[in-house]
Image (cartoon, rainbow, N blue to C red; front, side, top):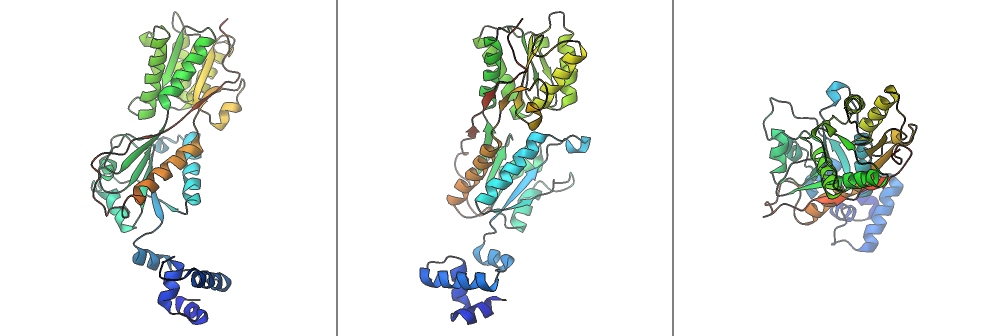
Length: 347
């Protein structure tokens, strides 16, 4: 079945069929409905590459995902859940998703911009990308609409989407303070990444507001993965005056700190209270279940897609509009504290 046969059976021209299937105003609603119904009955599917050329739209969003950890064999379950949320939000908005491969070191700085134009993409979602990548910086500074989830890139048509990392960290510290803890340490993520830096800032802000001193040795940098949390936990618990509570900036690190406590013969939360960040599936499966600051993955995915749609609604498709005079404000998604068994009153 092709468009000519559909036009013949509909009793109209091929141009009318094309206009009807593309919801053009020149065709009456009754004619559009009749042609669409017949197309469905006959199993007609439009030639998408041809439609893209005519409409100059692909209804496809590019995704760049490079946490920089896959080469080490490490996989963050929160990021996998976030990818699923982005895909679902795009599907609900009737967009397709194209995964763009990571630019190789020898490629030009414009590699991503060229890929967007070559595939006629509407825009790009950048997900937890490396913080210092020339190709990504060029993309963010271009006229391609971009939404970056937990990225540091800025540009005239680049919107940052993030959880309220600082507020979530503050809530965790206040929770531990209310339980009677005064020696509260933290295990951070890599501090060159915005989420890690923001969670540390929230931790410090809450400690200052509550009048808690933060010894330098109470801040230990991890990498968001379990082994670094376990190593940090051992280091903290070996201090002459060890903390009675640990706020870890990621659930895997928090679970690692719980392992370190068990290895030291300590109980959680009896001897050490632990709070994480993310609410990955494992947080509710460990025993005791992990108290954590939950990020709303679905809301993050929806916020990224909504940000892109706002940019697209404001002008022509990707790569064909002049830059805005000022960057878009960030989209911040609230977090919430989930209190479970790993945090309890200080003994």
